[in-house]
Length: 115
Image (cartoon, rainbow, N blue to C red; front, side, top):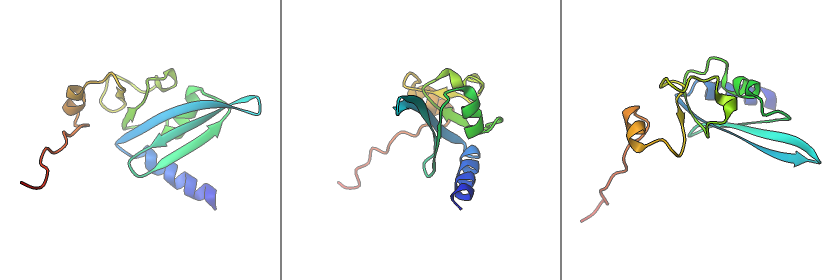
C-alpha cells in the first residue's frame, strides 16, 4: 500500500520543473547510510540507502530528468548537464541576476498593504 503511494510521489517529483536534491550521511549502527531527498514546493521524497553513488540520484530523479535541479553541486549529479537551463545547478554562489534570467526568481513585493 505505501509502496504505491511512494511510487506515485516519486513519479510526480520527476515531472516537476524545479526539484531540490540533497543527500546526507549517517552511521547506523556503525554502518554508513545515506538519506537522499528530492523535493518540490508540495512533495518530498526520501530514499534511504547504503550508497552515495550517482546511480541513486538517477533512480530518484529519473535518467532523463527534464527539470532544473537545485543542489550543492555534489558530483553525483554531474550526469545532469549544468550548461543547459534544464538541469542547471543552482547553489549559494548563483546570483539573483542568473536566477532572474532563467525565470527562477521573483523579487518580493515591496508594498506593505497600507498607508
